[in-house]
Length: 550
Image (cartoon, rainbow, N blue to C red):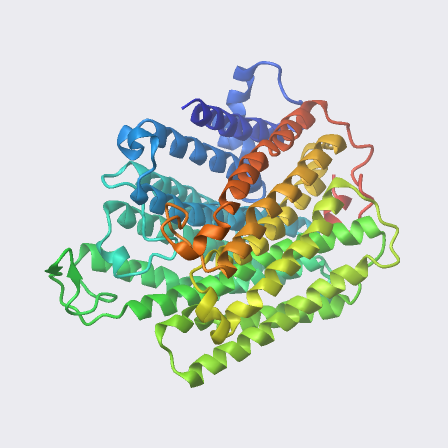
């Protein structure tokens, strides 16, 4: 409970501090806590611009507040931990909600909604987003979706426990929490759709005079392509979520087959639906979704590398064309997640081929960023450390993904810890490291102060070591055939016995990773008031437009 209260207080305080900082930038942080209240309650003082361009800060606060309520709900209910042992149902709920929260409430809102709304208008020379009111609707849709999603922990039966993929038929007959999860997803997807329209119009229509497309910073290109991915990939899943809601609430059977037996009884539904239809609709979104996470991260890394090498990016046009091709190809690879469903060899061969092809633009982008380091006058600032670490971490994630794109090897690796290790190398030490780079890089732009370098380096090195301590053992266990989503870690399987000791390494690394986030939290707050004041509006000596404005 104390942990939950701490995170609740932290999230609430973070929102109040950052709202004050943005609403009253010349006054500094007040000494008394109650002086922050006007900024917290007065939308007039903050304005529509905060809801849109400054959204990054609220997202962070909501994330920590959500963690608080989750922890609080767990420890307050003895039925969830009889004699201190987690029930399998609760473990499944954690797995489902972890993936949902980190992707749809964490990384996407921070990378696109946060950095995108704040940086993109400044980099293209626009006074604001094209549709500020639409931005407000997008934010509040996100807010409502997040609240609804987290509220699922408090309904009878607990939160969704069908995985973040919500596969039917289990998802269609699961607890009430699954219904709440689907409602939350509809709001979250709507938020992303509205935001994507705003980004596209802003970049196309509000660019400064003379700022042609081939003069745009690569970060803007990354957000531009990401917006099209959101616009085209999210509607199928939103439609699918509504259809699954109809299955649960209205007696339809879009995803329920005939003759389905549950607990020894034939389920009373009309039947005729197909669980595979949901998989196609879900993965048609979910693979472009991977690049919704990755492309903004690549854009941030490109900005940081160009600035800290003191030279232009190598092969700028190649980067742009590779990113466009990457976005296009992401729509025709989704079924490599479904090799185990019994698809024919012709269609399987097609998706294996497209999956191998999509690795080419990723390699081009990664190679261009690595070559950009050559011959540069490199400054090893904290943002640069995170940006450099992104390169090998994302490389490991990409290389480990190749066997999963080929049916013969995927048969052995599918649904094992190898898949979790691969995906998390892409998203955690990959994408999240890029987001940390962006936070350290643009922090002085938002606050007028620099974050402490010493604390930043402690945060970086600790996070780098611990993340590898968590995710590399997953690859080892997966190669040994240890299945994922097992609440006991696979203890009942003989083939898992030789690699079970890695569970302890992963657990220790996870706790250590949490501890190494404390320097970042302290640094974030301390630097608002005590951090070194920037000596100019452009403390990094950058060449992009956001640093040319006060």
